[in-house]
Image 1 (tube, rainbow, N blue to C red):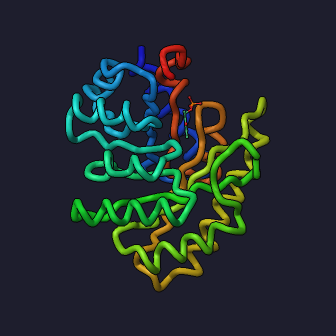
Image 2: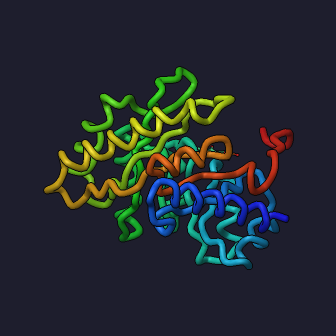
Length: 235
Ligand SMILES: *Cc1c(COP(=O)(O)O)cnc(C)c1O
């Protein structure tokens, strides 16, 4: 069942790529497994799925401890600075960096583990009060500052969570804007090897098809794969 859901999402992504003239290999589907049991992850893992997304540090640590070590763990949620140390050794990518201070902490922890950690800058494109992320205007400055001063942090691109809308078409301008911002920032940083700007993490269950049409390279899909989440046991 889970695998069928996963394959259906993957098929939709491939079709969106075909419509947009994109190579489907350039889009990675991250299965967002937060609040879901480890058996669910194992089921997909056995079918070859390796990219999973989590939001809660406690839960991510537990799953990382218990599950195969070649899983690519994406930390997609808001991250507190004092929690970075728990995931720095193995996290594949930190998606939601929106302050220089958080990036500084990631730098410090990356050095400890003798690695460079890929991050994305979270942009609140629609400027919703309820969401984290920098504005489109602030993003270039933050990228530049991190890239120039924190050598163990790789700025790999941008991430956004678009507004919840009835019609996913309504989010097309949001995705388009994030993509354009990424192109602009890349052009401004051609001489800095710490800025790669090839990743666009955008699109969730409700709007990933539109996001892929607009250039997403990572889509974060939970509900369409695992079903609705139950938060009643979480504090
Ligand atoms: C939970 C979550 C998702 C997945 O959302 P669905 O609507 O279930 O696909 C994607 N991105 C972030 C940042 C999330 O917190």
